[in-house]
Length: 49
Image 1: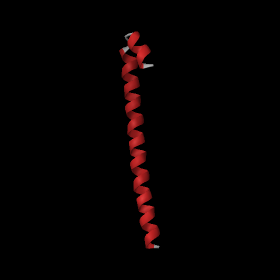
Image 2 (image 1 turned 120 degrees about the vertical axis):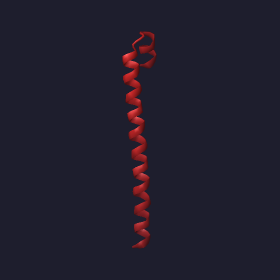
Image 3 (image 1 turned 90 degrees about the vertical axis):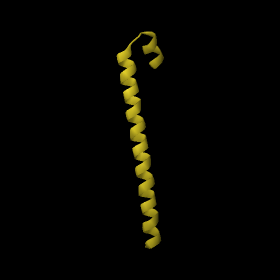
Image 4 (image 1 turned 90 degrees about the horizontal axis):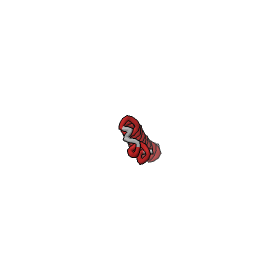
C-alpha cells in the first residue's frame, strides 16, 4: 500500500498508514510487556503457594 501511495504521491495515505503501524507496534509491545509481567507474577504466586 505504501508503494502505491508513494507512486500516487498520496502523502496523506502514507502518513495515516505510518501512524496505524506505529499504534499496532505500540499495542504489541504493551501486550508483550503485560503478558511477561503477568507470567512472572503467576510463577511467583505458584512458588509461594
